Length: 197
Figure (spheres, one colour):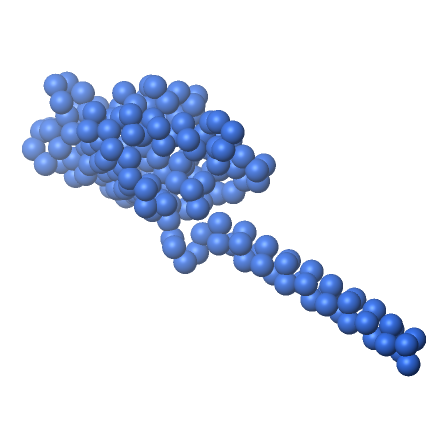
């Protein structure tokens, strides 16, 4: 389950559609938010965690898809390092394709809420890979002249997701192997009993 988490990560927090429907007075703000998104996506594509963290508010709160919460930049760093590096890492690599459902909803000149969908591409440490459809929402704040991600919530469909599909497949294969082993064992026991009789 933890492998589903990383892909939603911070990159999905700032996606904005390419076309603008906002009044012209907000266009400059949306361009600043697009620059945040583009910078974050570039840092993620390069695996640059330090740079990714520069797009986060120092007090950021991230709720990952496994319901784990990271608080602050160092909390996010610790989570990403645990998931992406070291002997117990779960994810060997990831990328994401994301879209916002609409332009960021602006509240005054320094707060916004953005939300949308993502397709997360995971390569697990075990060697398998899969795509995970996800949803996200983010709170964005402007401090000084810089927009930052203050909150991010990522989620996947609890009832229909790639990890469940993999688990179902493993269950069916295991059931088939057990059935075959039971038939072979039953046949052998039957032969042994016939010889003994």
